[in-house]
Image 1: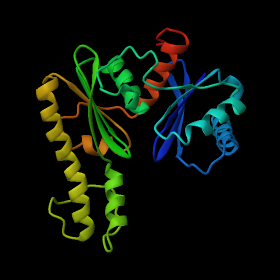
Image 2: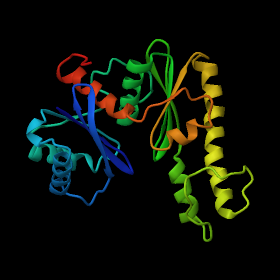
Image 3: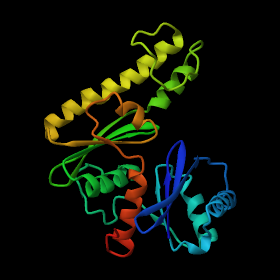
Image 4: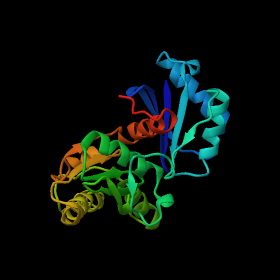
Length: 260
Protein backbone atom coordinates (compact mmCIF):
# COMPACT_ATOMS: atom_id res chain seq x y z
CA UNK A 1 0.00 0.00 0.00
CA UNK A 2 1.03 3.60 -0.60
CA UNK A 3 0.81 6.48 1.88
CA UNK A 4 0.20 9.78 0.05
CA UNK A 5 0.89 12.88 2.16
CA UNK A 6 -0.27 16.32 1.04
CA UNK A 7 1.28 18.97 3.31
CA UNK A 8 -0.52 22.30 2.97
CA UNK A 9 -0.08 25.58 4.80
CA UNK A 10 -3.06 24.94 7.07
CA UNK A 11 -3.81 21.22 6.91
CA UNK A 12 -2.03 18.02 5.98
CA UNK A 13 -4.08 15.31 4.29
CA UNK A 14 -2.88 11.70 4.50
CA UNK A 15 -4.33 9.10 2.14
CA UNK A 16 -3.82 5.34 2.24
CA UNK A 17 -4.02 3.75 -1.21
CA UNK A 18 -4.12 0.23 -2.58
CA UNK A 19 -2.96 0.87 -6.12
CA UNK A 20 -5.23 3.68 -7.28
CA UNK A 21 -7.97 2.91 -4.75
CA UNK A 22 -8.24 5.35 -1.87
CA UNK A 23 -8.87 3.19 1.19
CA UNK A 24 -9.06 5.94 3.79
CA UNK A 25 -7.90 9.49 4.38
CA UNK A 26 -7.25 11.75 7.36
CA UNK A 27 -6.88 15.53 7.78
CA UNK A 28 -4.57 16.90 10.48
CA UNK A 29 -3.10 20.31 11.25
CA UNK A 30 0.14 21.34 9.56
CA UNK A 31 2.03 21.98 12.78
CA UNK A 32 5.74 22.83 12.90
CA UNK A 33 5.90 22.00 16.61
CA UNK A 34 5.13 18.29 16.11
CA UNK A 35 8.09 15.91 16.03
CA UNK A 36 8.47 12.93 13.72
CA UNK A 37 7.62 10.67 16.66
CA UNK A 38 4.40 12.51 17.42
CA UNK A 39 3.32 12.38 13.78
CA UNK A 40 4.33 8.73 13.46
CA UNK A 41 2.46 7.72 16.60
CA UNK A 42 -0.61 9.60 15.42
CA UNK A 43 -0.61 7.96 12.00
CA UNK A 44 -0.08 4.48 13.42
CA UNK A 45 -3.05 5.01 15.73
CA UNK A 46 -5.24 6.31 12.89
CA UNK A 47 -4.23 3.37 10.68
CA UNK A 48 -4.97 0.86 13.41
CA UNK A 49 -8.42 2.36 13.98
CA UNK A 50 -9.28 1.39 10.40
CA UNK A 51 -7.64 -2.03 10.55
CA UNK A 52 -4.36 -1.20 8.81
CA UNK A 53 -0.75 -1.38 10.01
CA UNK A 54 2.61 0.14 9.09
CA UNK A 55 3.88 -3.26 7.92
CA UNK A 56 1.41 -3.12 5.01
CA UNK A 57 2.96 0.09 3.65
CA UNK A 58 5.48 -0.35 0.83
CA UNK A 59 5.72 3.24 -0.38
CA UNK A 60 5.40 6.85 0.79
CA UNK A 61 5.10 9.95 -1.39
CA UNK A 62 4.99 13.53 -0.15
CA UNK A 63 3.71 16.73 -1.74
CA UNK A 64 4.58 19.74 0.38
CA UNK A 65 4.30 23.51 0.17
CA UNK A 66 5.79 23.94 3.65
CA UNK A 67 9.57 23.32 3.35
CA UNK A 68 10.16 23.43 7.11
CA UNK A 69 7.71 20.58 7.73
CA UNK A 70 8.88 18.33 4.88
CA UNK A 71 11.98 16.90 6.66
CA UNK A 72 9.89 16.04 9.73
CA UNK A 73 7.66 13.82 7.57
CA UNK A 74 10.73 12.39 5.80
CA UNK A 75 12.19 11.29 9.14
CA UNK A 76 8.81 9.96 10.26
CA UNK A 77 8.48 7.88 7.10
CA UNK A 78 11.93 6.33 7.51
CA UNK A 79 11.40 5.54 11.19
CA UNK A 80 7.80 4.33 11.20
CA UNK A 81 7.31 2.98 7.67
CA UNK A 82 10.94 1.96 6.96
CA UNK A 83 10.60 3.85 3.72
CA UNK A 84 12.47 6.77 2.19
CA UNK A 85 9.67 8.89 0.67
CA UNK A 86 9.53 10.33 -2.82
CA UNK A 87 9.28 14.13 -2.55
CA UNK A 88 7.38 15.71 -5.42
CA UNK A 89 9.05 18.47 -7.43
CA UNK A 90 9.09 19.78 -10.99
CA UNK A 91 12.13 17.70 -11.98
CA UNK A 92 10.32 14.37 -11.68
CA UNK A 93 8.64 12.52 -14.54
CA UNK A 94 5.22 14.15 -14.75
CA UNK A 95 4.18 13.58 -18.39
CA UNK A 96 3.45 17.28 -18.31
CA UNK A 97 5.11 20.01 -20.39
CA UNK A 98 5.92 22.90 -18.05
CA UNK A 99 5.77 26.25 -19.85
CA UNK A 100 6.09 28.20 -16.60
CA UNK A 101 9.07 30.56 -16.67
CA UNK A 102 10.41 29.16 -13.37
CA UNK A 103 9.24 25.51 -13.23
CA UNK A 104 10.96 24.83 -9.91
CA UNK A 105 8.82 27.50 -8.26
CA UNK A 106 5.55 25.71 -9.07
CA UNK A 107 3.97 24.39 -5.89
CA UNK A 108 3.94 20.62 -5.56
CA UNK A 109 0.19 20.75 -4.92
CA UNK A 110 -0.35 22.48 -8.27
CA UNK A 111 1.73 19.85 -10.06
CA UNK A 112 -0.31 17.07 -8.45
CA UNK A 113 -3.58 18.71 -9.40
CA UNK A 114 -2.44 19.16 -12.98
CA UNK A 115 -1.22 15.57 -13.41
CA UNK A 116 -4.37 14.03 -11.92
CA UNK A 117 -6.60 16.52 -13.70
CA UNK A 118 -5.26 15.65 -17.14
CA UNK A 119 -5.57 11.92 -16.48
CA UNK A 120 -9.15 12.17 -15.23
CA UNK A 121 -10.66 15.01 -17.27
CA UNK A 122 -8.51 15.57 -20.35
CA UNK A 123 -7.42 18.87 -21.88
CA UNK A 124 -7.74 21.84 -22.12
CA UNK A 125 -8.30 22.18 -18.40
CA UNK A 126 -8.64 24.77 -15.65
CA UNK A 127 -8.20 23.63 -12.05
CA UNK A 128 -9.22 25.83 -9.12
CA UNK A 129 -7.92 24.84 -5.69
CA UNK A 130 -9.66 26.53 -2.77
CA UNK A 131 -6.97 26.23 -0.10
CA UNK A 132 -5.08 28.70 2.07
CA UNK A 133 -4.60 30.43 -1.27
CA UNK A 134 -7.05 30.12 -4.16
CA UNK A 135 -5.07 28.94 -7.18
CA UNK A 136 -6.02 28.65 -10.84
CA UNK A 137 -3.98 26.28 -13.01
CA UNK A 138 -4.28 26.26 -16.79
CA UNK A 139 -3.39 23.37 -19.11
CA UNK A 140 -3.60 23.71 -22.90
CA UNK A 141 -5.13 21.23 -25.34
CA UNK A 142 -1.55 20.05 -25.99
CA UNK A 143 -1.03 19.14 -22.33
CA UNK A 144 1.14 22.17 -21.58
CA UNK A 145 1.06 23.68 -18.10
CA UNK A 146 1.01 27.42 -18.74
CA UNK A 147 0.61 28.75 -15.20
CA UNK A 148 -2.39 30.54 -13.77
CA UNK A 149 -3.36 32.82 -10.90
CA UNK A 150 -2.89 32.91 -7.14
CA UNK A 151 -5.41 34.83 -5.03
CA UNK A 152 -6.01 35.04 -1.28
CA UNK A 153 -7.85 31.99 0.03
CA UNK A 154 -11.40 32.33 1.32
CA UNK A 155 -10.61 31.38 4.91
CA UNK A 156 -7.48 33.52 4.81
CA UNK A 157 -9.64 36.49 3.81
CA UNK A 158 -11.97 35.90 6.76
CA UNK A 159 -9.04 35.53 9.15
CA UNK A 160 -7.27 38.61 7.80
CA UNK A 161 -10.29 40.87 8.24
CA UNK A 162 -10.63 39.76 11.85
CA UNK A 163 -6.91 39.99 12.65
CA UNK A 164 -6.15 43.26 10.85
CA UNK A 165 -9.12 45.28 12.08
CA UNK A 166 -10.14 46.45 15.54
CA UNK A 167 -13.85 45.63 15.45
CA UNK A 168 -14.64 43.17 12.67
CA UNK A 169 -15.53 39.78 14.19
CA UNK A 170 -14.48 36.30 13.15
CA UNK A 171 -17.42 34.78 11.27
CA UNK A 172 -18.36 31.48 9.68
CA UNK A 173 -17.47 30.96 6.01
CA UNK A 174 -20.97 30.63 4.58
CA UNK A 175 -23.35 32.52 2.30
CA UNK A 176 -25.84 34.85 4.01
CA UNK A 177 -29.47 34.82 2.90
CA UNK A 178 -29.27 38.17 1.09
CA UNK A 179 -26.69 39.82 -1.11
CA UNK A 180 -26.94 42.99 1.00
CA UNK A 181 -25.82 42.16 4.52
CA UNK A 182 -28.12 43.35 7.30
CA UNK A 183 -25.45 42.86 9.97
CA UNK A 184 -21.67 43.20 10.11
CA UNK A 185 -21.37 39.40 10.08
CA UNK A 186 -23.59 39.09 6.99
CA UNK A 187 -21.76 41.94 5.27
CA UNK A 188 -18.42 40.17 5.71
CA UNK A 189 -19.87 36.84 4.55
CA UNK A 190 -21.48 38.36 1.49
CA UNK A 191 -18.38 40.30 0.53
CA UNK A 192 -16.03 37.33 0.79
CA UNK A 193 -18.24 34.41 -0.26
CA UNK A 194 -20.14 36.13 -3.05
CA UNK A 195 -17.00 38.00 -4.00
CA UNK A 196 -15.25 34.63 -4.40
CA UNK A 197 -17.98 33.43 -6.75
CA UNK A 198 -17.60 36.51 -8.93
CA UNK A 199 -13.81 36.17 -8.82
CA UNK A 200 -14.18 32.65 -10.19
CA UNK A 201 -16.77 33.53 -12.82
CA UNK A 202 -14.86 36.57 -14.02
CA UNK A 203 -11.44 34.91 -14.21
CA UNK A 204 -12.77 31.74 -15.84
CA UNK A 205 -14.42 33.82 -18.56
CA UNK A 206 -11.15 35.60 -19.27
CA UNK A 207 -9.04 32.42 -19.07
CA UNK A 208 -11.27 30.65 -21.57
CA UNK A 209 -10.66 33.56 -23.93
CA UNK A 210 -7.00 32.51 -24.04
CA UNK A 211 -7.20 28.78 -23.35
CA UNK A 212 -10.33 27.91 -25.32
CA UNK A 213 -14.05 27.96 -24.57
CA UNK A 214 -14.15 24.15 -24.43
CA UNK A 215 -11.88 24.07 -21.33
CA UNK A 216 -13.31 22.04 -18.46
CA UNK A 217 -13.22 23.62 -15.01
CA UNK A 218 -12.50 21.37 -12.01
CA UNK A 219 -12.62 22.63 -8.44
CA UNK A 220 -10.91 21.09 -5.43
CA UNK A 221 -10.11 22.09 -1.86
CA UNK A 222 -12.20 22.42 1.28
CA UNK A 223 -14.60 25.16 0.15
CA UNK A 224 -14.90 24.02 -3.47
CA UNK A 225 -18.39 22.59 -2.96
CA UNK A 226 -19.84 25.79 -1.50
CA UNK A 227 -18.50 27.94 -4.34
CA UNK A 228 -19.42 25.42 -7.05
CA UNK A 229 -23.06 25.53 -5.97
CA UNK A 230 -23.19 29.16 -7.12
CA UNK A 231 -20.48 29.33 -9.79
CA UNK A 232 -21.96 27.91 -12.99
CA UNK A 233 -18.55 27.90 -14.70
CA UNK A 234 -17.34 25.03 -12.47
CA UNK A 235 -18.05 21.67 -14.14
CA UNK A 236 -17.08 19.31 -11.32
CA UNK A 237 -15.81 19.21 -7.74
CA UNK A 238 -13.09 16.64 -7.00
CA UNK A 239 -11.94 16.74 -3.37
CA UNK A 240 -9.23 14.09 -3.75
CA UNK A 241 -7.51 15.43 -6.86
CA UNK A 242 -4.26 16.31 -5.08
CA UNK A 243 -3.99 12.90 -3.38
CA UNK A 244 -4.64 11.12 -6.67
CA UNK A 245 -1.97 13.26 -8.32
CA UNK A 246 0.53 12.23 -5.65
CA UNK A 247 -0.23 8.58 -6.35
CA UNK A 248 0.07 9.04 -10.11
CA UNK A 249 3.43 10.81 -9.87
CA UNK A 250 4.72 8.18 -7.47
CA UNK A 251 4.02 5.32 -9.86
CA UNK A 252 5.36 7.22 -12.88
CA UNK A 253 8.69 7.64 -11.12
CA UNK A 254 9.04 4.48 -9.01
CA UNK A 255 7.78 1.88 -11.47
CA UNK A 256 7.60 3.86 -14.70
CA UNK A 257 4.04 2.62 -15.06
CA UNK A 258 0.58 4.07 -14.63
CA UNK A 259 -1.34 1.96 -12.12
CA UNK A 260 -5.11 1.90 -12.62
